[in-house]
Length: 294
Image (tube, rainbow, N blue to C red; front, side, top):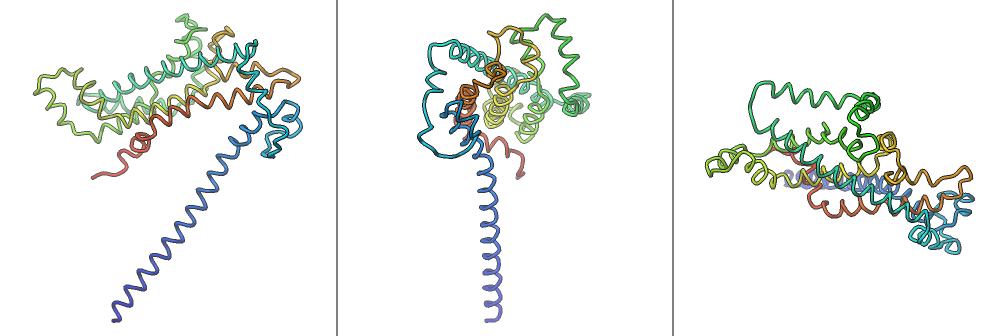
């Protein structure tokens, strides 16, 4: 009886601790969610207010429905100069993002595949060199990269924006860490079946790495869509600007375009949000791959 009572007390104590931890974790994540959602909600409300209200109230969450209007979006989608330029910049950002994500994933996957699936001299040294590039801030590389783009005559071109970041060390590292958990017996099985090395790489191993591709696609898309500094240095023509650069040009010294700027910014969230919805089923699996060994 004494042992049974002791076990019951221990079980009750464990349940109490678990409940306390659950409440604490729920409260913590609720606070974090509020901190994240608040600016988005404030920006969404601001996109429905006229410019005079924005200057008077700022990004507030005051639900005064009398000040809410669709005028900003009507102007943005209307047949006017700002609307035409906005969707031109939107198209430029979409093209840049899609091409960058495709080439980045392809190149980084091939590099990571070579660093993972084959054994050769200097393999670890090459991987160390890849990781070492992550320690160098991009700001230090801006000047030599800019001179390189001038030499290659890629200034004011989409390739000048894409090429410096198309082989990202962090993406290579992620792919390599994911593929270290894959059985190398698949390579031998493919060779026995008569598959070429390219066939094994793209037809056997690539489909298995879908979660890694999904996770990196979301992160690469976000990085490309929100990139401002490097495209601002490379592009010269206004008709080639990406959306973040173009929205900045809408501002005047008098601040009379903040309403259009905020409406355009909120609508600019849509592509990354859609990409996340499309790949979210693989995202968590890809990000947590390798965390549990068994």
